[in-house]
Image (cartoon, rainbow, N blue to C red; front, side):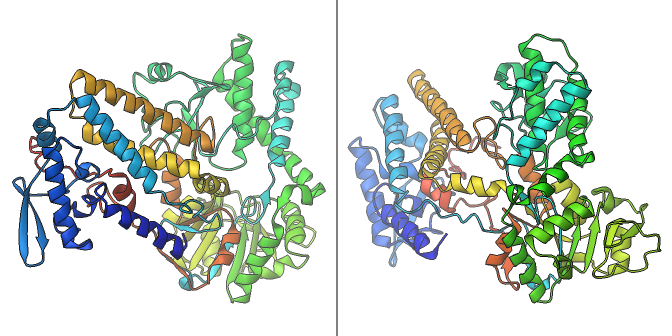
Length: 597
């Protein structure tokens, strides 16, 4: 967000706050915030509020909620004098007014809608830069001396054409080698059907999105290519949409009941699972979902084991590899500043060599102090059994004992414990980048104390969505409406309940709108309705930094310090921009909460 746009937005917020619609927001803390505005303005605000209530007019205080006022009085300081005005809590206010509750609720609704409209000034959208690096933890690049990289979807980004090729080849493998029905061949690849981070219930054959608290997001459960109704989901999971810990995928994304698809390569696998399930269901053919899962997994695995994917890319590098010049720029930038570089990848040397020559040049190995291929991650990071092997320039194995890891040499397999012993590269001076949160990053952060950077290509698309005016307006109004529901839920008469039900229905519709802007089936990979996704929680746990591509490093000086944004905890004072804008204040009136013991 540029400084100018921040100033513009803040100015618009302050101007609105001086009107009767928002003046109470800034006096919400009884002195802690009252000093932010002119005291005379505050006094007038309270007087106008009292006058308004006498006339039966909706008072200005509707958008603000005092955080912790005295139950008896609300004090505002003006100069050397104190002016005391009685609290007008929602309960006291509605009791005093002799107006129809339905009219009152809709007046609050309309006032809030006008407020939200006024608080989104022109130009407030399009503020996010897709080349930003985001911090989950504080990282000082000045302390980082060694940069490590995965290869696939880290140094090398691939076009979506690769997904189609993987899907088609695995689908044909199912039909020809596993003798699946020929009708499955009619299912073409569906771009943008699946999303990274989804869970698959192996026995039930269901693809779904789960949040950080192990709750299934209703509306994102698919059996085949068709959504499963919410009531059926609840029935399938014992009357709840919570998945117990022992059934959720384990540390590396694989559990007895659930599999989490964590890497970008898993997109075609999820789509093939959905297509195969859909064929059997549509044709009323009895089958075992567990067998289907294993067969599809094996078919996808054969694409990699038999080298099909490597062959396609090597035959047409220009078609499949994206933005190779940026990879060169990053490596040159780091090396020219004296940083040590290393590569640890599961891909074979011949494949990596050809790709790196295309992106970086024939002397690409000059950038790296250590190159390790076919590392067999994540076992490379947690198993000390495999020794390093050296390859010659043709990729053939050598039989000499490895006593050091030398620049210009290529090594195969090995393990991190020998890597640490031979290099001495330990702790927070090492920053390693990869796209797979489990295979690339988890062990490095939790077991070895390295800094980690997650490559999340989906950030680029999701940033474009967040930058749209439709998203900004929908999300801001959704926040405001939620705050309104929270404040008005004490109205229990039949007419009020009808209004609240209308609001709840609109809230669900707004959630669907914001979800569909990302992916019509599963929404954003980072968020469910209001919680982080299981993927998002793992992203925060296993990565210090995350970004759309390693080229984002080019935007930052190598002595730059990344600071994570301080976001409010639920119990902290709600003096935060989004809550000020929407009136969705989380700290209740003491008077209203007096019944809680």
